[in-house]
Length: 243
Image (cartoon, rainbow, N blue to C red; front, side, top):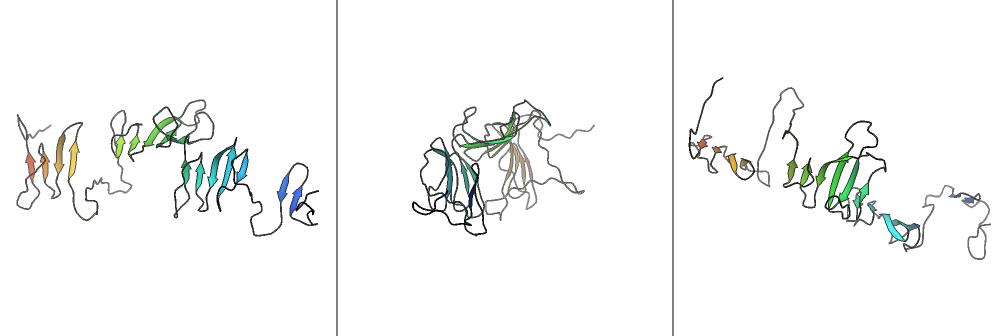
């Protein structure tokens, strides 16, 4: 017998069943069918840490929660206010995969190989199709400074691409093939210089007026037309070769 209180049993027809193994709620009520009332993390199970928030604990510690806005937090990740979309937050030891060797994963990491603090996101994939028993390889990382590294776990700038042949491929999806590189100010209403540089020095630049300087950071304008300025310490400044 199931009691509704300390002194009375559930009435006949109540939407609650227990067959000795399974516990279930049924019926057509529009309200929530199962509501926990506890607010502590002791033991294992679901509890209510705050109003309109559900959380789950194991071994006496909170492991996951869904807040009133629908944001999902895993491993005690800090939840932030978000009114636009649902988010998964990875906290300490934040790691997501399907527990299969060689599976792709997204992980919240600090400094590899210690996966202890959610200061970066790493993305890894299996090295080939239908490969079993092979560990996934990290392909991309977004660090705590907002730098994105592709092919490197230590990006040195906003976008750091590292490959064995130094190749960056940009392909146009239409028949009128072209590649466009744009440089403009933060407001998006004025031109900015487009600079080309190597490890420690600048090779050349197009300034905001379209003048090209090679070996100089101050190309000279040619009466309102695009100018070409060459500067070198020795040898020919301009060479024309034929095949």
